[in-house]
Length: 93
Image 1 (cartoon, rainbow, N blue to C red):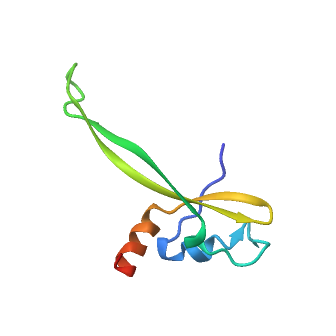
Image 2: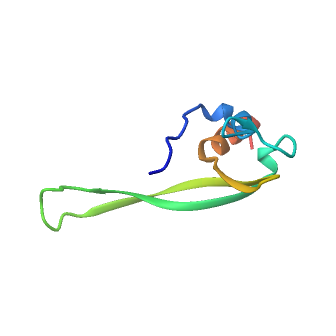
């Protein structure tokens, strides 16, 4: 079983990635926007009438964004979907 995930606002993501297992990451401050950007498309699906056999299934794409960053221990991935959206809205890009 995976350990529980901590919840925090996307606005704190840049601060939160500076720490790993309660300890400051070695190798200096990590600039999240400089980390390599990746994307993945998943699909959210709903069955129109789940109690009816053969009912249509409708699906919508959901774009998710991740950054691969590096510290002294190696690389780690961070989901940045909401952070990327906030960055676009705040930067006006």
